[in-house]
Image 1: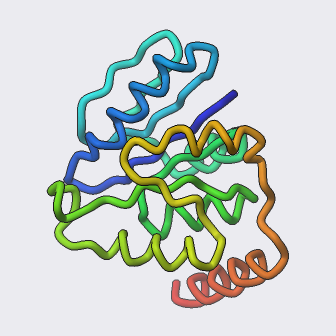
Image 2 (image 1 turned 60 degrees about the horizontal axis):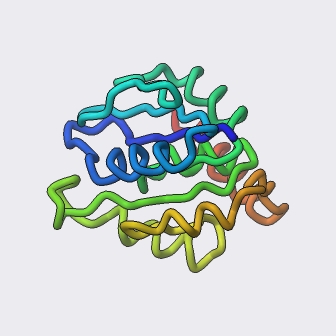
Length: 158
């Protein structure tokens, strides 16, 4: 099982997510984890490969290769997953934990969860990931149309 973890590129560490990955990797030693960690503490181990930051093309490639993608609640990371046909597990950064300046990720992830586009995680919810072992779930057609429209719009701004 290949798990890709994205914490984003912000100046704030996302130690809460990194700690969950560390614990999950101990429980699942046969799974491989590729982690784009940004700031925060997590060391490369036998089944965890850690990158502080990664180039866009490498992130896209890793998402496509992943069986499971776990990401922060940043729109760019989530839309990359959806565009690649993955329904990501998402743990939103929180102002409460000093992971972000406000709770925009919490609001965004709540909305996407209601729309059925993401699996929303809360602290300690790894069992929900175990129940999604076959999470190569492809994005359905309405979601793909939305992604195509957003991509076209964003491309038109450049």
